[in-house]
Length: 350
Image (tube, rainbow, N blue to C red; front, side, top):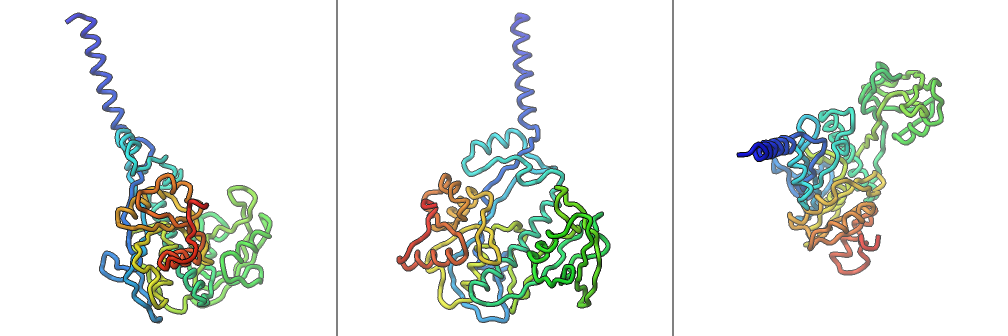
């Protein structure tokens, strides 16, 4: 073999080795894939009703109102390699997204998981409140401390679980009322916070600090609305996190508390966040959620308005996209589908 041929052979081998090594190098991307889809009117992994209501008469529908999920591979500590990322880019069912889309910088996987759990918990409460609001059942609220940030004024003064009842003597009954009053304060100004702990009322005065943007006054607490429901509603979904099942939870609760069937014989799936007032919000991973829904057998997919454009571009065959702006409009759309009468909001008309 000539020197030139030997050099070419060695160079080719080195290129192949480098290419192989490069393909196995971890990359800062995450692969999103269709996840499980679960019937909110059915049972959980333990065979128990996914949504259990006690203290109020319920009605069994026997229908399908499925919430959808997205699974992922990758993330800090378990990054996918370049070869897997390239495979994902070529797979129409998979989305490859930058790692920070799922895992914000300076947050560990544990912190992300904890935040997803918190969002799911809050989503369930919002779903319950929205459903009862739709049914005309009053639900009082209270503003609870969810967490206290270290090094800020409330650290050592307030605790998770404390109920904020007043700000500078003005009574408050929800998070919005607290934040509205706090927004009127200046950075460095004192603020008197009245709270309940263990049934006993107390008061503390804190000096506001500057938020990271340097403009807003904060005391270093994260609040969440706690609803005092007139009867018990328990939603059990296991390890699923995030807020995107809110709409489907609300629909299932309305269905269970209302005589007759909401779904008819239609297999309905969907997604969307929900506010206590019944407003539906956009979510991520719409393509993978639609794929999961169609694979499970759904023929109708409830889609938040702001997700319609992306959903139309990736809609699987045989899946009808119904635009859901509010809980009420979603209920009306399902009724129109089952009766064949009335207008069904469509993503095409978005």
